[in-house]
Length: 390
Ligand SMILES: [Zn+2]
Image (cartoon, rainbow, N blue to C red; front, top):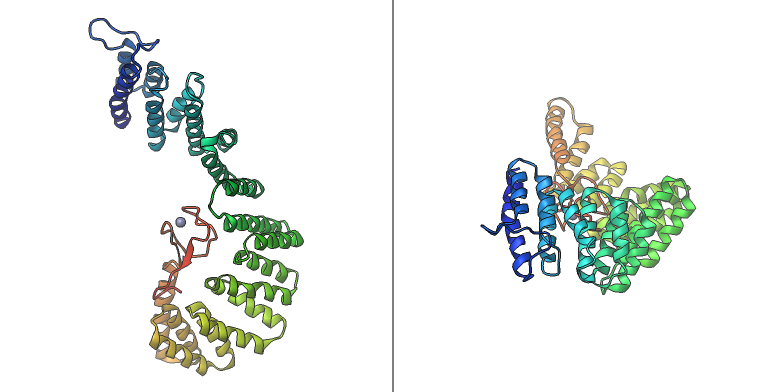
């Protein structure tokens, strides 16, 4: 309450003065008191504030401040301030008041509509915001900003078809490259089809994604998932292996699926060669551990030797955790008890640490996200390369 009163006391006299003196005329609805030149409505507004009726006070002050070309900026600033403070209903009233005025310039009215749309977005009234931004798309100075807000709305509503349509229009209006994002929208549609048990439609959409962005590793991963479901392991393997050329950073996300496809095809030697090659070429603890698993199935001592050599070069909690697993198989008595204690420590360490981080906003995650849940950036999440990470 104190903050609201403070804000209004601070802003409205300024607003009044700017409206009155910059306009060089007496606003129609202001009644001046002859003795002290303070409008009686201003006193009425202050009384509402003092009686803790801020909504009535805001209405009085809005009525008091005549809208004309000179005072539009003050109205917009006040509305913006209210929204930033989370007082969205008040921001809406101020912006609605502006939008209803026919006396202001079309460009100023467009800005007021844009701000009103932002208010609706903040209030979660997506359909109203969508209507306003659609209207604004046709009005030059606000076209791009309106398109960006519409895309945000369609992302929230998971209306990917509309998101694609508007993003393509936005791409034509700017120099920026939106192909990566459009490919993600096709992938979102493909995942929807996968959930609806429509594998062929899902594959068609992944192909659209790759046509838009040949480096869309996500499309290859979805295609691999669909083909595994259809038991087409040879084609699935081909799709998963494309990830290596599209974005090798994502190989840890598919290495187990690749191994499973080779197993289904009964191609153990090829699997062995593939895993060995990718771990030696790209490194990273996930690929190294995939190779250790291959070795452990053949001979536990060679897996152990490989891990010890790796740990001498690089400190890694995940490598140590795996070494304990291998050692536990043959250990007995107090040695086994000691290993169990160390294992509980590594398990705890790995459980409490995040493995991914958004390079744009710093959001930490335990699983990979294509879109950052916090800043909504696409492809901004990366593996953490530290002692208990990748
Ligand atoms: Zn982020």
